Amino acid sequence: MSEAYEIRVCMDIGSASHQVAIGLSTGEILEEFDIAHTPQDIKLFFNKIETHKKYHQLPVVVAMESYNGHARPIDKYVLNKGYRLININNHKLAQFKKVFPGASKSDVVDTRKMFELFTLQDHLPLAKNALQEVAPIPEVNEKLKRISRRRRLLVNEKVRILNRFQSDLNAISPGFLEVTGSADNLWFLRFITSRDDITQLARMHYSSLKKIKGLGDKYALKIKAWQENAEFAVDAEWVGEMIIRDAKRILELIGEISDLEKRIELISSESEIVNRLKTISGFGTVCTAELAGEIGALERFESEASLALYLGMAVLDNSSGKYVGTKGSKHVNYSAKAAMMTAVAIHIRNSEQSKKYYDKKRNEGKKHNQAVRSLGRHMVRVIWSMLKNNRDYNAEK
Image: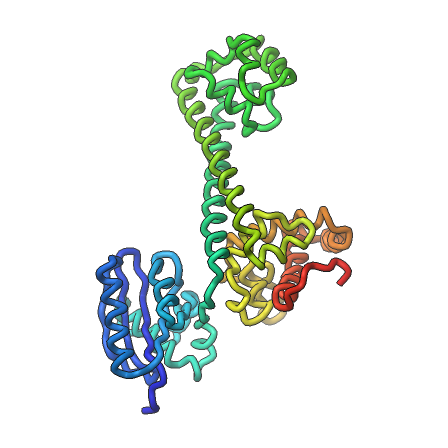
């Protein structure tokens, strides 16, 4: 058996507890145990590692499947301790289990399979490709990640409620939505919530309408025109309460989203990635903040190709025999992909050169999203070069 050069710790992450295996790089397992996701057991976990570290006088590397998520805050504690942190790709771990199946499916077996995968990294390409070292991420990008993800969740919630809100309004009073250009206009939501009974809106005086913040003469006159022929379905008595409640929640969400965007604006100026990406025409503060938060640090990626896969701007070859095709990668960060697609779409409207490329792809028969993603693949190469060489965007290159 060769000489050990590091202590390896593998964790099978669960929502309430985690299975742990501690061993040496020679493949020898020293200890196996499980810990609850509590301060006491997390402290016990690190105490056990420190005991083995002191005895063997070796550096420590910790591997866990899909760090972040339920692994928080253990993953941060690992980095703070000065240990190396390795992310085990869950899809490739599943492939490894198929090639080298275990006796049964259990947390203990899964942890041992992770340990085997770790041990074989220097001899098996599948094992090596499944392991990715987690680079330390600047604190500002960690903040942007949490805030931008929270913002996206609230935006998605707003869209769901707004769709229900509009559907219910059309059902109880056809023509009601025609008084506004957009159902999420603040003045319209304030109008809806100005009365406890939605049918009372058809009887509001002009003077009362003018007191609603943001409601000007143009829309006040539209409301008066609607009131002349306003009708409500019989279920308006009880559905109206739901509509008003939804309108209040949409107003709350608009306020919360606005507050988060102000925080993003304030924090993002400290991020080098944001400052670089904002030099690209069309890449606004929110999208660049999302990208900075999800990318974290460029050192996480071996090449611009791996970054492109992560951002959802590249596809994998899926050819067989005479069939030539592609397929999407399972390793896409969908938050980053959404931000990238939005930023590239706006960039097209602000760059004549990119617009020509987009039009070319459309003329070739590609759909809108395909053309945007095709341009996005080229933009990833540009972004990689910008971040790698500390340069701002230059449209001439």
